[in-house]
Image (cartoon, rainbow, N blue to C red; front, side, top):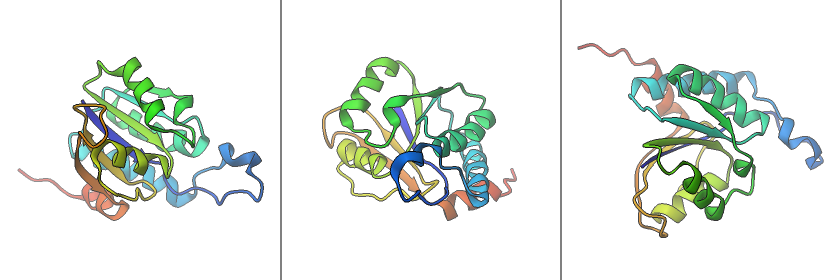
Length: 164
């Protein structure tokens, strides 16, 4: 299975209290980043069969343009809220393991932690960063990190003109 991991795009600063964290909106730059992520994924021919997103507003607003551009079903998944861990990932795989490719849209440090758990690689997922992991086993370190793209790279891919 191919596992795509997309960190939510740039969002408003966290409120002084944690009460409204789930409602934080994308900034104008964040909306641009989400659209660019969608275009970059389309340019690269990435074709998840399902998009699962954290129900937090900033993740959902990042996932929507991607799902729309790739014409893929978008599902809110409560397990992808901040605090997502390998146990929650195993539960998602149990539910959606038949999919050939999944896109998870979520938060830090959860996504970097999942990459490390699956591959052993130490990464830091930037906002609107995209990683691809080939999942062959759920054993720690048994999978392969194929790439990690940063926002500037996503922008270059999204705006590239391809000629044949």
